[in-house]
Image (tube, rainbow, N blue to C red; front, side, top):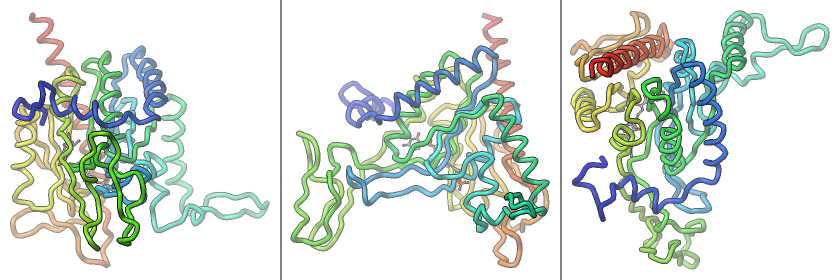
Length: 365
Ligand code: PMT
């Protein structure tokens, strides 16, 4: 919420944020590969999607031992990225380091170790077990095609600070793409953090004899995380909301899609609508923690509210008519199809319509 009511000293909170929190060292290198990637696809007139994925962390110490994390395995982002590539988009995949990745997600983070897919053959070479051959051949073919055509750029982040700097700089680099740019913000971004000037340098000591810590910086206040007797007290500050700044300043011509995660079903539609009105972007996709693989709610300016649900399979309907997560432990906990295979083509269609309406508005001017 970079609105007027939040402005301080004539700056928006977003501007203040970047003045007082350090630029990650890796950003320059990431921006240089991103610039080459964007230039390549811009020349081909291709649409480029920035897909954010996974949760951001909030370190409590500069030399980080403890941190606060945000929930997200990266399934939504990694799965969506594959479908965007199938739709012809080049994808910049800004993801939490070590979270799920497009293509490899089919074989990582599962109860199977990757070695369980392998077997030695009679000649002593390692091959894929016959039961996995056909599925793996399909995934491999799609992965190799994406690689050959340079359709996927992987950029990792860990902390909320790294995420925000990347979002700002990548959005700026993508500006020349105009309406060919799409932002699909599936990452779970921290709402609270420890500002740089309230961060302790070293590991917070739990024993009273060693816990005299001071914050970094000349204007240092009390460290945001500190010991009070035997208690660890953590006073986090709000992260400025960057969606408004993204919409108004960093990516004014792009299509912007954000996600809203809730756990209380009575709040989902209200909060998604509220986000859309507050940030004035194009689409909010609402999802519930427990049913996010089975149903999502599209809330858009022109399209009102629309549920997208996986076809009947492993779902149950509650008395309210809403779909509920399957709680029967004997039943598979995966839906019949990946819901992203329904979400992404719809987003791509909305993106096409938005670009066309912009072009016709320009023609009429
Ligand atoms: O990865 P999975 O396990 O599959 O889970 C996927 C998911 C549930 C995490 C994903 O589908 C999802 O809902 N992601 C968004 C969750 C979230 O963080 O919502 P939020 O209410 O904190 O943020 C809403 C929007 O505001 C986001 O687009 C975010 O980019 C933006 N935001 C958030 C914080 C902040 N300081 N500034 C922002 O602009």
